[in-house]
Image (tube, rainbow, N blue to C red):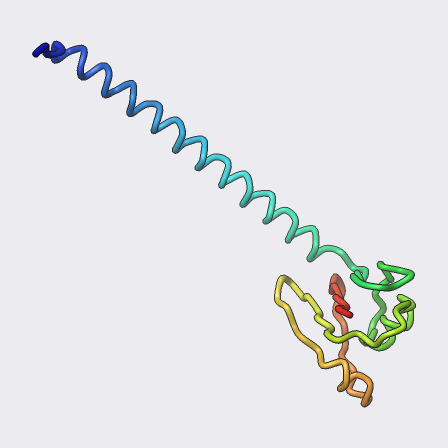
Length: 122
């Protein structure tokens, strides 16, 4: 049975630890960069003053006006699907606010805020 000298064993262990530390640091830097990128996107979204409409519409971005309602925004975006949306979601500052399409058809409307995004799901 042959034993490695203590100095060589410590060097081997240190080299293995450095590789793990380097991987951990690289993962931490990647996670930090991803977090910074997400924060930048959120800041830019809060500065956007138009209304974005995701779904079957002719105009996916419309200007926000004071007192603009969801129904007015959908008319301005020109909803193009033959079927009424099954689900409507307003996204405001990262928060998802579901809207009942039937309530909208009954006349219950919702004021929009600058930078809102509307998702229309068939």
